[in-house]
Structures are given as C-alpha cells and as structure tokens.
Image: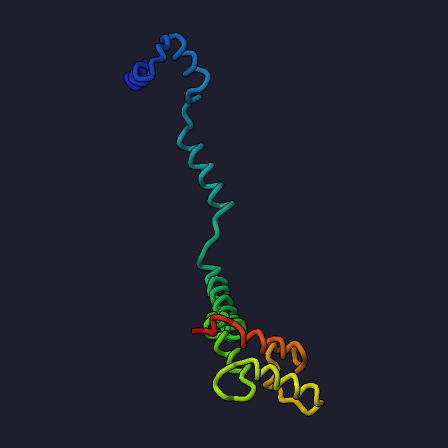
Length: 157
C-alpha cells in the first residue's frame, strides 16, 4: 500500500487489508499505459473531425453580430416606446381627476357627475374628453367613474 492510501485508511478508520487493497487496484485501477503515438493519433483525428478554422468563417460572425444589433435597434425603436411602463399611481390618479373635472372648477365633486349625467340624458353632443374610462363612448359608465373619483378618499395627494 502506498503512503497516500494508508493515510486515508487510517483517517477514516477502514482498516483495509493490503490484500483487499491490491485486489481493488487490480479491478478498478488504471489498466495500462496508452502509447504516445496512439494518443497523438486520437488527438489529431479529433482535431480534424471537430476543428473549424475560424479564418474561413469570420464573415459569419460579423453577419450574426450585425443582425443581432439591427434586431435590437428595431425592437428598441418600435416596441419599447409603445409599451412603456404605466404611470405611477399618484400620476394616474391626478390625470383621472383632471379628466373628471367636468366643470373645470379645479376640483372633482359630485356636481361634476351630475352635470355629465344631465348632459348625456339631454342627448346633446358630447365631448370626447368626457370619455373618462377610455372605452370610446360617453355614457353612464363615465358618470359612475366621475362619481367614484368624487368620493375617493385618497385623491392623489
């Protein structure tokens, strides 16, 4: 047994006999030496099989890099501005309150909801800016939205 094996046998407390150690080496140990010429032949065959010369394909790398950059620029200019992050909650509430102020007196109260409801019932032409909920119609849903804005406790402050 070598010093290395004896050290681990003693530390771990296996107490392996030298005969068992030799038998294990015979079964699981190295099976022999590979001649240098065989080793070189295998390595050369692997190089020929797997090796790609980068000099021949330099233009492919540049084309892939250019295409990737172009795609990133297109995505950035087309997709990102159209899908920006929504406004913070306070800014959304402030914008909603400004739209909901029908009589433009600087505050949203139940009178604004009442005026909008009366205007809708009178069948007069409505202004598109009174579409509070953004569904394309000025109707009872917009009146409800103005009423909710009027009674909201936290008005963006």
